[in-house]
Image (cartoon, rainbow, N blue to C red; front, side):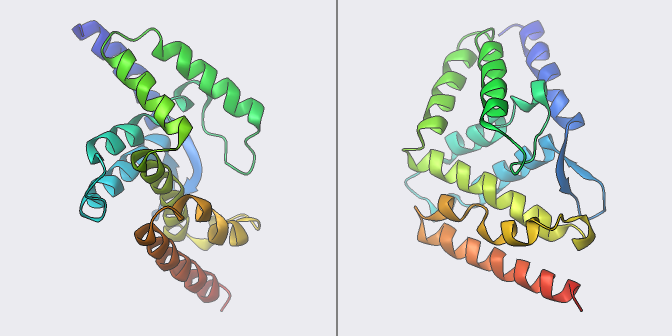
Length: 188
């Protein structure tokens, strides 16, 4: 990869630092898409000993690229995102990936196909981290930033994505416990 090609890729990725998500940080500002991607990559790294048969390096790479389509569309909260929105984001991302130099193009296309198929332990782990991090972030934000629909969503979001792993199920249970406590404490 030439230096120009590297800088061009990084320029697109930089937009994820500017594009904010629906979530707030514990300090009260909107979380960026890049911050979310970084933290799910960190989660994957920290889970390596729990998933000794998984290629955690691959999971981390999935985490780092999974929302790059949002560099073109911005973030749309899951409860507002339509299938047309997803198709548009995926198409714009795929078109951009097709312009990347090899071997980046080949690797990212393979990763995206694996992530879409959701058949491997790596893809399932990336997706579970993606969903759970959003719930964790909401729990860390002030309750005043939550929408009414999020009180229920916090306890259901990602539940189907953790079923593949007893460890991830227990992590979701711990997160749910913290969510319930946050809600109870907020209603006092």
